[in-house]
Length: 142
View 1 (cartoon, one colour):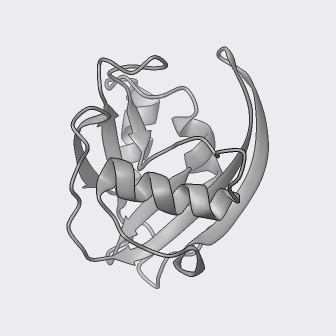
View 2 (cartoon, one colour):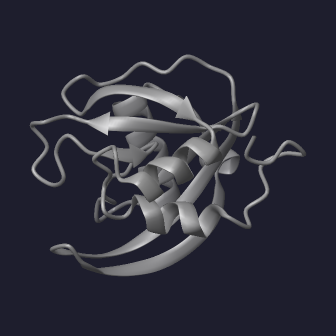
């Protein structure tokens, strides 16, 4: 997965399509995808960013945050989480995958996690927890 940060340190959060097989109509941090058998995780991240969000980048612009395993909520996988910092371009959503998206501050994300007012992907909280010590800019998590 990739977490996309804008120049203010806000995180792009997407609302997954209701037609998704897993966790439809849930908000998630930026984007997630699967690695093909012939791909490196960073190359898969670049491909998925282009396909889901219309973001063209290179593996060298992605910063690896953490690798972790998942065996919960019916999911079993190995995750490599990347960050794309200081994004200033235009996001072009794949409407089959993503309903809408917007940049959220860390305080808004924490509020949503605590209040449970929005339907969040079950791994959203884990991804955000991994980012708590991750440095984005001098304005970290406005």
